[in-house]
Length: 438
Image (cartoon, rainbow, N blue to C red; front, side, top):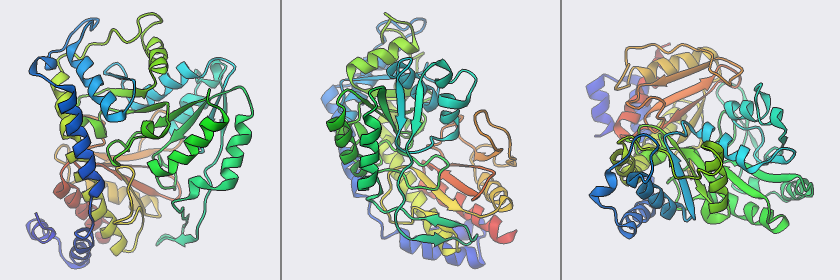
């Protein structure tokens, strides 16, 4: 469906329509070559694994010998190129899976080193700040800030964004700082957050991660590299585990779920570490032999099959949104056509009032709860109130179109997902119209 048709059907005119038509011209020139390779990789995994209809049968209770779980995890292991995967409904979120893995891999008295600075709020809280955080249980924790390079750029709001070049993660001084931290023999794991969270920085590409992972392993082969892969799955044709990560972790109601998975999260990587994570999740000695799929095996497996198409639809919608809001004078990151490594689009709005207006506009385009009005509210793990727009069929499934933002400077909104490009386009148009009318 063309943008012109959407404008006619939903009554967009004036500056928004003109900007939308220019944005469509920009977005139409973008090619999604990596997604063609991702689709091929996923198809190959299904054919090599040999999925049969009987594999959809699940289990209840303890989940012993669950065929759907076994097949699903085998498919994911092929896609990630790893020994084992733990993909379970009993891991209720990406944060739950990450904290479980960190607790399993960093014993009491050992050190967890984050080399991508401060993690997103809820994870940072679970690691260091909450009453029963990992730190309170005897884990030591250090953060190493990502380097910033490039020329500062001013946004419409007057707030300055520090640009990051593709080689920011390759900075020589940064490598030296990591090596110095690794001289501490108590460091048991290095943590990497690929996506931006609520930080004004780009997501990390697999190409950026590869040399730093190699350098870590050269210095300390015993240190586990643990990657928060949320929002990044299937955006590129390689995953962190293809370039040296020991564990990659994420939610199943984001990219990999293809909008069909009803819940859950995964940990993919080395077999010995997966066993430790399973022992932590369930009980020592049970390993990964329990955990029912509760009849959702078909949804998991089919969701994975269509996930590459869904991710591509997200990227197309986000590129349009980036082009549209850039045309309207807002600072966006990434810009339309720039390499994307996750399904998140940052738009710097510059004020609390604009954040609320954007969220209200986007909400009015949702397939579910379109008549609701978003209000900032307290969210566990976040210091400031957070405003969200969501009308997803699966609660919290940010592979479906949504946005969220903490009510703090620089008042940047993060738009995620969009399983149908036209819906993401429409949502961006509704948000733009709300801003220009306010």
